[in-house]
Image (cartoon, rainbow, N blue to C red; front, side):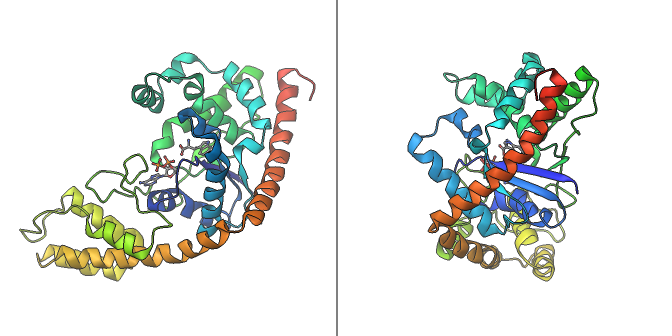
Length: 328
Ligand code: ADP
Ligand code: TRP
C-alpha cells in the first residue's frame, strides 16, 4: 500500500480552511492508503511560541484531528518532536541542500520580511525539515494545500539529489496530493482570498452555532445582482464556495438560479450557509469537547503513534546511514 504522510503546525485551533483543505482528505485517505499524520511542533518554533503553550497546543490539534474522524488504528497520529530520528535525516539532507535554493523559497522570503529581526536558520531550513518529515517514511503522497507546493518541490529535490549522489533508487519523489480533483481553497468571509489564522477571519471547528451565525451574517457582500446571468464578483463567489463545500447540490442550484434571475437576497443566502456550516461543525465540536477532556487517552494515542512513526523512521534511517557510509 502506498505511504502517505502529512502534518499541520499547532499554531492555533483548526478552522474550516484546514478542515476542507486538508483534514477531510486525511480522513478519506486513511481508508485507502498507509497513512501517518503528525503535529509539526518543531516547525512552529520558527515563531517562538511560549514554552507553557507547546504541549497543550499539540494536544488541542490531536483532539481536533480525532474529532474530525482520523482513526489512530488506521492512521497513527504522532507529535513531530517525539520522533528524534527525524533530526538525523534533517542533518543529512541539509548537507545536500544549497543555500541559494533555500533562499529562493517564497515562504522564507515572506517570513523574513515579516520578522526582519529574527531571520533564523530554522526558518531558512524549514523545507529540509519538512522533507525529512516526509522522506523518513518514504512517503509517496502528501496531502497539503496549494501554498505548500514550493516546499514539496524542495522535498522532491532532496529525494532526487540523495538518490543521484549515492547512485541509488532509495527515496521515492513525494507528490502533492489533493483528494478531490482540484485543491479546495476555503475563502475568507471578510472579502479576502483565503481563510487563515494570520488573516484573522476564521470559522473554527470549536465555534458554537451562535458564533458561526454571527461570523457568516457579517460576511462582506455588494449591492446584489443587477443583470440576469451576470458573473459573480469575488466576494459573492466566495459565499457560493461555502454552498459548494457545505450544502447539497440542490441548495447550490436553488441559490444559483436566484442569482441568475436577480431575485437573490443575501440575508437568505447567509442564513442557509450558516445553517449548513453548523451542520458540519456541530458534531465535530461535540467530539472536540469529549476528546479534550480525556488527556490520558490523548497522551496514549500520541505515544502509540510515536512508536509506530519511530519504527518507520528508524528503518529508513538504518538504510540511509549505510548508504552514506556510517554504521547502520
Ligand atoms: P493557516 O493558514 O490557518 O495558518 P496552515 O498554513 O497551518 O493554516 O495550514 C495547514 C493546512 O491547512 C495546510 O495543508 C493548508 O494548505 C491547509 N489550509 C489552510 N488554510 C486553508 C484554506 N483557506 N483553504 C484550503 N486549505 C487551507
Ligand atoms: N509546512 C506545513 C504547513 O505549514 C506543515 C508541515 C510540516 C508538513 N512538515 C510537513 C505538511 C510534512 C506535510 C508534510 O502547513
